Each structure stands twice: as structure tokens, then as C-alpha cells.
Image (cartoon, rainbow, N blue to C red; front, side, top):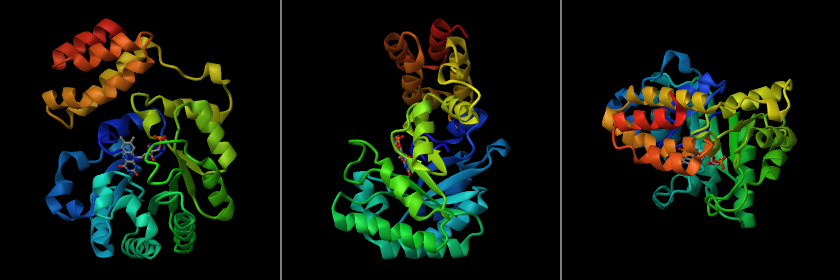
Length: 314
Ligand SMILES: Cc1cc2nc3c(=O)[nH]c(=O)nc-3n(C[C@H](O)[C@H](O)[C@H](O)COP(=O)(O)O)c2cc1C
């Protein structure tokens, strides 16, 4: 799966992921109150392309009623899945008791899950970190949430093997993903964390026994990672032979991504917004330092096209 990535996993990124064989993509997280405000979902960003399905949405909130109404609105807008975010470690989210801060309130988390599941006919999943911190009380809360969520019939759990207080430090603990899958073989368990290259991802998938993986940072500026994973899973190719776009193909993918973005943003905004992707795309070039610098310096569309032509020959 293409993981939820705030500020990245918009329709353009999701469409590219699908083109490279990704089976399920997610929007970035949305605040329940915003989604309850009807005009919000009429914005162009929430128009789902016909070739994009299945596409999941993700919600952040603390109140079962507001979360339920928001989930209904997302399903009406065409999203195929509702994922409930109890994982986000951003300080502004935690300050309001949302996201990862909910992990020490198992009862409230399950109340939200139950209310949303009762109200929508589409699959409802939950995104979790493994606790607020590394205390045993926090670990117990996490285990309780998993147990009760499975008992409530949650359609899948996405587990990022870090605590909230770890943010992105240290390594994601894949043993916990494996333990939860072993404990609840009947549940769909998706692993997340430190998924950067295809061979390692396939290894984590197989050794953890997880039903799937959610690729996050590893897919930014590298949408072809989904094809590489598929090729490895199909088992016909050794790792040295899996798809690796040459420079020209990389240039074509960058152009395609930019063109998809211009469906969503004004040209000037597209160039500005695209910079964060360009700096990642540039890493796969033979001369990453120079290429990244020049790509992110392009001040308008014409300059960007010239730079892409210069370095990628397209
Ligand atoms: C820029 C950025 C934005 C993210 N936005 C979301 C989000 O909206 N919802 C969510 O559940 N996780 C979000 N995440 C977390 C990722 O989905 C993923 O769980 C995490 O990055 C661990 O995977 P990785 O180490 O392979 O990147 C975000 C991560 C990053 C780096």
C-alpha cells in the first residue's frame, strides 16, 4: 500500500503509485471537523479519478459523533476505506489530544471504532503506533486496543513499530508487528516503518508474517518501488534484475508527476509544491548533488522543464 502521507499522498502521488502496481493508496490525514464542513470535500483535491480505486481516506479526531459524520461524508465523496489515525506524533496534534495521544485512551479509541463501523458500510481500519512511550502501561494500552479492535471486527490494523515519543528516531520494531499477527491470525495486519528499499521490504513482509506493508517515505520520489516489490514477490527475478528506471525514464516519470499535479494546483503553486518531491527524485540520478540543487532552484515551470531536459534528456 501507499501509506497516508500528509502533504504528499495527494491524487497525483496516488495515481503514479497505482501506475506502478500499488494495490491500495491513502489520502493524507484529515481532521474530522473539517470533513464535516461540506464544502471541504467539494475541493478538487477530493475528486477521485476513476482509475484510482481503491483509495482510502484517513481521519483524525477524538469525538465518536464527529468522527462518524466525517466517515460518512468521506464514503459519500467516493473514498473506499476509512482509516482512523491513532498514530500521528505532531506536537500540534498531540496538544489537542488527537492522533497518537489517543493511544493511552483505549476505551475512547474503541468507542470511535464501534461508532464509525456501525455507521459506514465500507471497510474501517486503524493506524496505530505501539504506544505513547516505552512504559509498560503504554504497551498494555496498545495491546488492549489491538485485542478489542480485532474483537470489534476492525477491517485492518496498520502498525508503525515506533512509540509516539520516538517520533521518527531509532528503528521501527517489526517484532511487534509479527507478534500481533501471530496473536490474531484472523485479522489483517499491515506493517509500517523504515521501508526504503524493495528487497528489505519483501524481507520484512515475509519474516513478520504481515498481510501487507504501507510504504511511506520510501515512495517519495520513487514511485517505481511498488513495481520492484511486485517483481520480487512474483519471484521470477533476482534483485539485481528488478526494474530500475534509467535516467531518461526517471525524467519521464518526473514529467508525468508534474503533469498530474497541474490538474490540482495552479502552475506557480505546482512548481513550488513539487520541490519536496524533486529533491527526492534527484537522489536516484547519477549526479544527485548537482541535480537536486538545480531541480529545487527552478523558479517557474519553464526553468523546471529546462532543468529536467538538461539532466534527464526529456
Ligand atoms: C511527511 C510525512 C507525512 C505523514 N503523514 C501521515 C498521515 O497523514 N497519516 C498517517 O497515518 N501517517 C503519516 N505519516 C507516517 C507514515 O505513514 C509512516 O507510518 C511512517 O513514515 C513510517 O514509515 P517509514 O519509516 O517507512 O516512512 C507521515 C510520515 C511522513 C514522513
